[in-house]
Amino acid sequence: MTNKDSYNKIVDSWIKARNNAIVNKPIIQFAYHINSKGTILDIGCGTGMPIAKYLSDRNFSITGIDQSSKMIETAQSAGIKNSVFHTCDFFDFETDKKFNGIIAWDSLFHFPKERQNEIYSKVYHLLAPGGYFLFTHGKEEDEHIDSMFGEQFYYSCLTKDFVLGLMKELGFEILFSIENFVEENDQRHWVVLARKK
Image (cartoon, rainbow, N blue to C red; front, top):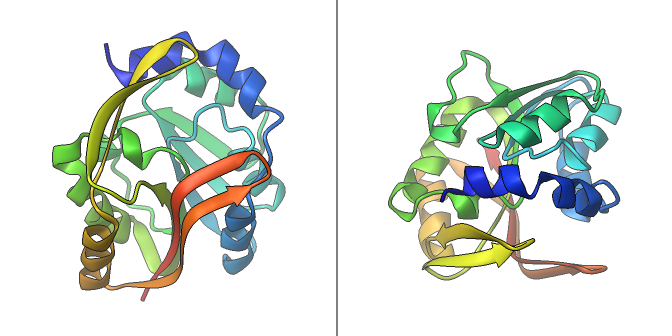
């Protein structure tokens, strides 16, 4: 069983949960930094709700990628303007385009632990100079299976300090690093906004 299969199975429950979800303040701050009509890559975009929809309404051009074909079908049928959605693994995603912003809200922790350190160099390469990267992450090194809507999901992450060190080496400037982020009923272990110098 893979996360892709599990997400395909829970798509109806996911739609109910996400269609009425808030757009968290760090996402609004991320959008504020990007020039109007900028291009944004949404890694693990799911159904496009509410994040891609919010960014689209701000007149950004959105490219959404997700491993779950059911999530992508839902996103494609949602009528989100200025957007294209692809069923794709992040590590297989190739484009000549450079993005003004990349967002990975609740997606990096699904990547295989042995490939976690590859994420940041690939994101750096995909960003235009001065581009912004917003992501959520765990703080401690971890690898486990958990359940959501009755299905099993794989999670992993590296330590916060290791990730920050890796990003600084690549040439990222950290604009904010928030631990134990809470907003209404939403909680995240760690939220980071970085900029490609």
